[in-house]
Image 1 (tube, helix red, strand yellow):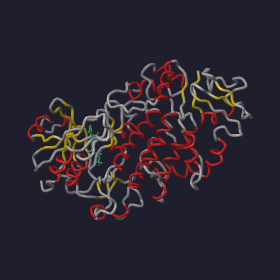
Image 2 (image 1 turned 90 degrees about the horizontal axis):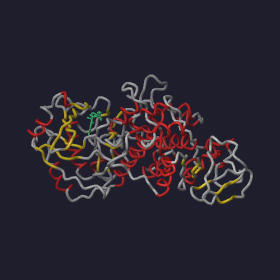
Image 3 (image 1 turned 135 degrees about the horizontal axis):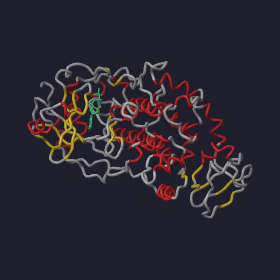
Image 4 (image 1 turned 60 degrees about the horizontal axis):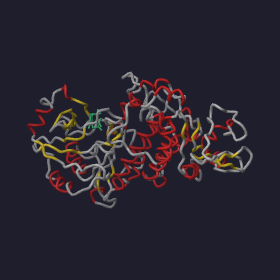
Length: 486
Ligand SMILES: Nc1ncnc2c1ncn2[C@@H]1O[C@H](COP(=O)(O)OP(=O)(O)OP(=O)(O)O)[C@@H](O)[C@H]1O
């Protein structure tokens, strides 16, 4: 096939000298596979081995050298035509070499990593890590068809965070990599239900002033494409930030980026006016109860709104997004996404939808490749969870929230509320901290150290004594909750 180039070979030699982003993972040595071995491993590219079909070609399941892998084969029929749902970028034929070139220089547990490619230059095949749990698109939009419950909020935030980390890794590499095709169909779910970013066919690895960037026509997928990206020199990392914002809206709402069943069909045109008017509940996926914690509800929506700002200079960096989502992941109870110890008790305790009980997403133990989210506080929180306690952890998150919610025109409707939520504020909202909780009685700035006493249940014991959690304003209280309660 005419699209083959020697770029892949040179990329491999570079790759072996690279260290992966996560030092605990062994670097993958990119291998050359005999074309005939790949044909044999896919039973001659049989339908039984077919995992899926994209606009660039077909993906097959195979076992190679004792390892389960995915083999990507560009379609000749599609090799010369643009992606059907995409705005045309480089020809599909170049995407294979592009993917090899990019992925051989960057490896991470947050990416669908390249394992090798075929040595036959007429039919270049990519061998990448096998992702056994489909795509984020499937998780969000095919759960009804598969008779699977939609993912819990804890799970969704975690998938969003892992995707954000993947993009941040790309943007932080030198030279930066701009993915250009961030979408839920390109986020794959591995065997431990972690999100991994894949499909680097359109990615560009270059500095912003490189000729390569300035000479590459805009590309991406309709519904996710940054409206600012109309000429090559408009490309920046903020282009990916916009697409991530769309993906986050998709995670929040459970609706597709473009869905003619909605008016307006574009998710951004539909969701952002609702968010600006403070109608957050309307934006949340109707299939499950929205996140209980108002701060989570607000902040998820605000992060998405910030990412899709029309002025790209005002969009956050992916690093900011990672920090914010990390804060949120710590506010959402661990057991809504890690409830394998006693799922039923936890689901009932937390008032999460009952369907979560049956969810393999929720019941599957987190295993190999799991992100190490366990700071000291979350370890304590996990311990508390085993004792059927409710856990929150803020880890200084409140200040991020203030920064996030205040000070911008777009979020002005949140500003008043955010001010009222300031920790230790005169409004008397209490603050508690795990292990050394300080209770603030309503209407008082006097605090009392907890000396390790247990904090009563925030929601159930609404009339708990003088040192209450101001349960009549429990939403406010939750905002700063960082303690453990029974
Ligand atoms: N590494 C993988 N492991 C398991 N399944 C995969 C893997 N990569 C892709 N697939 C499956 O193959 C399908 C097609 O993937 P592919 O990347 O070719 O296209 P896409 O991203 O869905 O669409 P497009 O190419 O238009 O962006 C995916 O939807 C997924 O179901």
